[in-house]
Length: 224
Image (cartoon, rainbow, N blue to C red):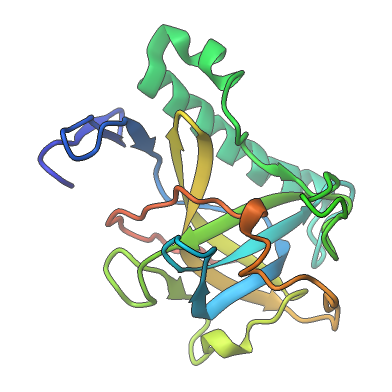
């Protein structure tokens, strides 16, 4: 942790400096619910022109059904765990102004897969889901990067539509919430694939653009 930062209730608080005139707060690593991955950029990072390319995926969590024999209640439980941490982060960052500031941010806890993109269309596979965009500018294996939790599995083997689970690190600043990808675990491939999606390099409006990773310990993310 940089000397300008400090720890508040276990979270890392970014203190504004001359070179970084904004504040923000990192949460702790937390496991996601099961979801189908989309916009998979694990083998090669991607980004809009002018932006730093990042590795990552979008996780599509169904609103009305469970996945891989998990019940909808289990899916919602994990989403609520993330939401609870995010609320605590806002309180630690903004104090008494947290509730008011949360009304002003551009990015809430999760994206809505039913909302159309700037093209006016809903992305393939997104309908009926909550969306978690997880990115990391550091490569796999870097101490601030991300990991694959399936032994022997390579980035090229992950395809859009597969059921996976992620380890995430939430980040909050004045723009809202974003998530750093810390780890991905393949759960099941039932043959679902998303086709016809635009090139992610040209439609990065749905991606987070303020994700940064900090060194953190990864706990076991075993899925029963």
